[in-house]
Image (cartoon, rainbow, N blue to C red; front, side, top):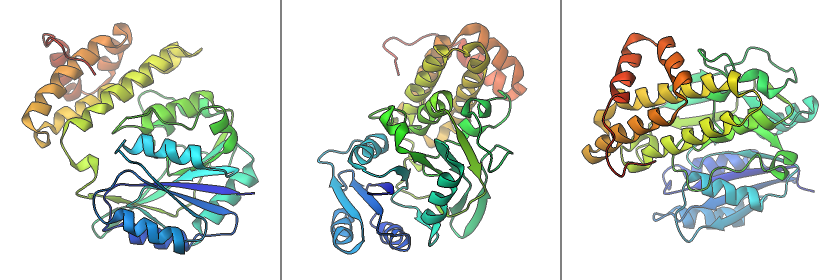
Length: 325
């Protein structure tokens, strides 16, 4: 039986894929499988993955005929996976040798639905440790307890799918799949659903994932219309949280986070192409009007003056015809 399935989407990462695959090789085990999903790359990535399928123990190569985005590629990997546990890696990141064996041991020792881990962020030559924003380590807890408070960074703000490991029972319950077609912020509805609906989780101080930031081809570096999918992602977070049994407690966190992300994008609007910048303003204004208005009022009152003023001004912006997420 396969113990661990590692789902790795790739898209036009020929420069980085060899390092990623080399690190997977340093984590191989007879009962591990590596689902390598090529999301219709147009560079040399398909050739690199074809070689990896022959040379990397446990490799399974899956190719999309059309580019679907990260969420869709991960879903393809989940559907192909046969392991008792699942985890993720992005095609331009890499791992410390033996990391997956330690990660697997942590969740088997704790016996919970999922485990969240710290990671190392790599920007050029700089290395920075980023920790799960939850203080209790190595203790099995109710994931709902880690959603709040609303005014501080919590586990749902640490949305990296690859910073953890997940029991197959979550996939069987439909909690591991991503919203198909989301091209950015795909981790946000996913992490909220996990914390609302899974039964147990833990955080551990395990380092082993190296997250490459500042990659020119990364969507986070590109100011095109795909970035605006964050609106669809957070609309989903707010809509699903509004149906939760503890909606009155959890909605302030969801709305406040949504507002903070809108403000962040508006604060760096110069990186967007001009038509996209205009669309960002229009769509964000409509999104603010879709939110529960009493909860939004409280969220704006709790934010700093600069962000609150920016969002209140946007909220008063006249609605443009035909604007939707």
